[in-house]
Length: 173
Image (cartoon, rainbow, N blue to C red):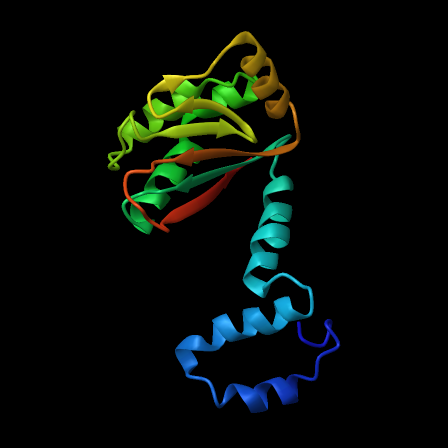
């Protein structure tokens, strides 16, 4: 990887011995980003994983479920995996139906700590549900539906239960 960036791995390794082993990833990410490249783990998520998913049998869409504001990372992962595995959610996505209710009910049935008065749901940049307020007008539904017609998009769910950096992202094809 370092050779592709035209960096001398020996120089970088010589300096790495001055850094505690549990901080290597963070420092390597910073070095790579200094040269204007995404961190290696980000390249893995953004390039390799997406390529594998797009190559799925019969796949015509790549959907990411990004969950933020959960009580902890484990709950964020539970919710995002529940969304990516839900047959009801998959049916809505295949039909290009921005059914925020299926998203909300899947999160609720996953068993994570999330309440309707703190939950926000957006299809791409279109907010459809915000902390107990249904924002789903005909215009919003058309905009959200248009996002679901794209080959690749993200559904964002923010729990806002506590001030938390916990988040998770899962993919579905």
